[in-house]
Length: 540
View (cartoon, rainbow, N blue to C red):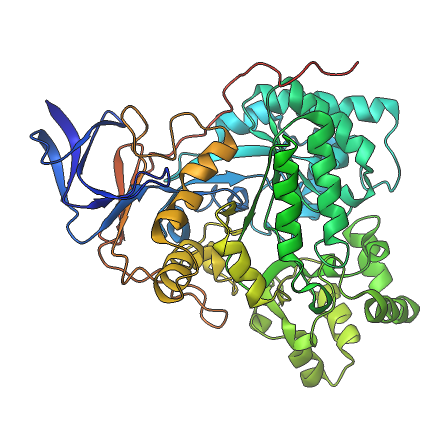
């Protein structure tokens, strides 16, 4: 028997949560064809895995790499972490569908997240079929915020019957094209304008196609438990799988609520509701700077927001609202030292500075400094916000039911995507879980951590032939030295790949990373949702 790749001598974790075995793994024509001790095969390439962990490729269930993959198809910062599959289109943001007369609107809306990405009119089918060849597999979501923009712009109201029908039609088109489901970003306009009934109507469309709902909760700070209850209720009424993405309890007033939230999800599962959540292993999150401001500031789009920011009375009201409520969706922070400029297309010399530092340098009040910066950067600034308790991170990583998602883009240490100072999770999420929380702090076991990143994630996504090392399944494989596979990316120096010169990654049976060096291969594919029967009969 012949094979393309034979992996010998490694400690094999199959991704199911079972204990590892010292066996060989053979891959041929993209799929795993043999697993066992001392396989006697004729291999085109033999990989020596002695001293290495061999496991399924990591599935990054929560990313925004749709904003960078078209200009960075090698996906270096992700694939060198061991990631072989990324799920894109999250938080209600997707670059399709995009109607001919709404291209500028969508481009302006997504500018803080995708300042270098060209936009064009296209439906979701065209988006799927023209997506570039990449080094990683890609699963796609239709964004609810994008649907609302296309149907009714930034209007702060309920949709008309015709607008609701338009959103349903666009969602249906995306699902027929292979989208895994719909994402929502209920923390920012225009998604925040949607009431639960609107989401339930769209959830019926998801249910009729056997698709899932991925949600950035309406509130991740003081109203986090109520927002989680809303997501659970959507799962209960529509009987669809709900994925709560990058779950956190943000703001000093909310630290410690994680245990209660995990208990709520466990209770929902006992009721038969399909719900999962994922998290990243960092105490800082990332967002467009404009999104931390009150909703009324953002209403009407970027141009309207910038005009408001110029008005002294608006700044005073912003000051009062933030003192009363904390940052929008982030809660109260210890000080403005907790908000750091990450990516700024028009003021790149200020990347890395905090709002407090900007205020000191300009002898301004922090709110005035923030507003002036947003005006000069045309609303496109991204920031890092340190607002999460380390004890809550430990609770999430330690839970066997919480999956791992980076909430990051695939970037690199060269070219356009090397600009600015992105969140270190772009480069370090998966090795940070393994190196810090497994190897050093022993928050969870290596077996459970790998399961959370592979088999459990594949199950949540409904994948039938990925996420496990199993005969007949696709050959997505990650190999690393457990004692030295560590994250090196920091807030001060983010563009650093993980430590480990023997890290090897295989995607669809093709070697993409060979001993920590990218081979240049682009074997990834778009993973379309497998057509399935409706989960229940939709209401009419």
